Length: 87
Image 1 (tube, one colour):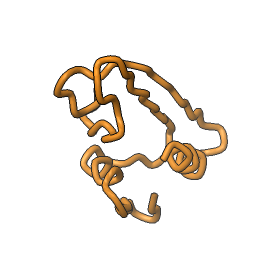
Image 2 (tube, one colour):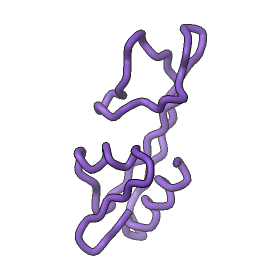
Image 3 (cartoon, rainbow, N blue to C red):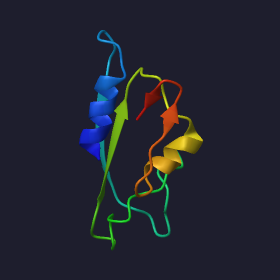
């Protein structure tokens, strides 16, 4: 998934734009099911208090995907299409 996000960021951003990859380690709180932006956490995350989660974030200046369509990307076999571009 990370490779796909970075590939799309490179593919759909202009040559002179900035692409940022951020990595964050954190402990999942009891009952927490979404990240800071409200997107679902991966189901393969921490199972007990001694485990940590890893969050990857890719930022770019590409065409962008609406928050509603972002939720579809994390479902099996989904693809989001915007005018003239499919990611």
